[in-house]
Amino acid sequence: MTVTCVADLQRLARRRVPKMFYDYADSGSWTETTYRANESDLAAIRFRQKVMVDMSDRQLATTLLGESLSMPVAIAPTGLAGMQHADGEILAARAAERFGIPYTLSTMSICSIEDVAAHTTRPFWFQLYVMKDRDYIARLIDRAKAAGCSALVLTADLQILGQRHKDVINGLSVPPKPTLATVANLATKWRWGLDMLRTKRRTFGNIAGHVKDATNLNSLSAWTASQFDTSLSWDDVKWIKERWGGKLIIKGIMEPEDAQSAVDAGADAIIVSNHGGRQLDGALSSIQALPAIVAAVGDQVEVHMDGGIRSGQDVLKAVALGAKGVYIGRAYLYGLGAKGEAGVTECLEIIRKELDTSLALCGLRDIQDVTRDILVPGSYPTVS
Image (cartoon, rainbow, N blue to C red; front, side, top):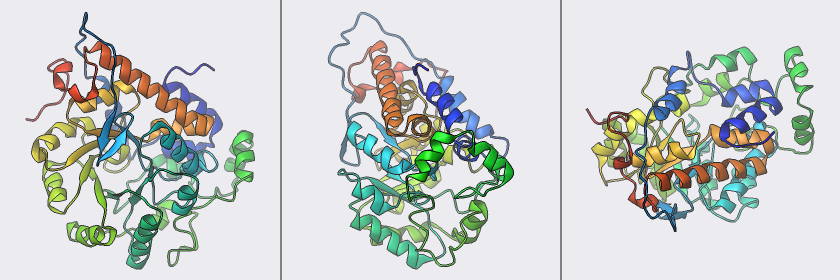
């Protein structure tokens, strides 16, 4: 099929990726209200079209945490990317490197930190989940440092796991359990299966063999509930920052008070994020929460945003409302599941073209000049 947008990649991914792993990426918690709102609230924002202006020599380049980017987009940390496509994290990191944007590796990745470092030349970012085994967390931070990671992304909103009904129904496991339903579905995904047979990476590369009592990773939700540290607090950030010693990003900020706490804890950037609608269902969409957080922290820290970004127009709207940059998670996973590394590249090309064209039609040539003036008043969230 001809691919014209990210939704086309999504349709291809649904055909090619086993149901339990496609649903893992394409689901929210409980009623999925917040998951849907992340997209619908972005879609409701309207642009002001400007005409008869010089649209030549357009520039999308920017910086995040001092790193030069080809556009204000980074790849978000997503667990189990290596189950969307064999060696998925390596493929996505290579695509991001060639495109000139950051790639963020999840703690819950299939390919390990060392795997990704061995197949890339540009420093990538590493996302940290804090577990009860603090010796393991210290070693994990040290492994990220040894791999040359240039930023640590501390996820603050997953001390406990929001219930995702599709994962419960599908019996999500890594690797998949050979149930009748799973085997029947896998039989229709022969291309995915052949690729998985060619790789040795089929479990959590950063965890298996490293965490105490991590002998059974089959039930992801049960294992997460037993291992993730529910006592994590702002007091722990100081230790993490000192152990890391580099740029620290705190992900999962949805309230101005928490944004200020992150600044006080020493964060270099914060990510306005509701975990893609996968944690607290009924929370605000990320784009709704963004303006108040930008107003609260000002220029004390870089404000990034994650959640609902499916197009270059979504990127432009978030930048207009104060985000220094945005992260794409599901969008790149659709590309990965659809076509592997080429699909991630295609996703990024689609977003860049949409961003470039929309910037021009709003009457601007440089992404650095974007403000909320390009948006129709009343169509976007403001600080109450």
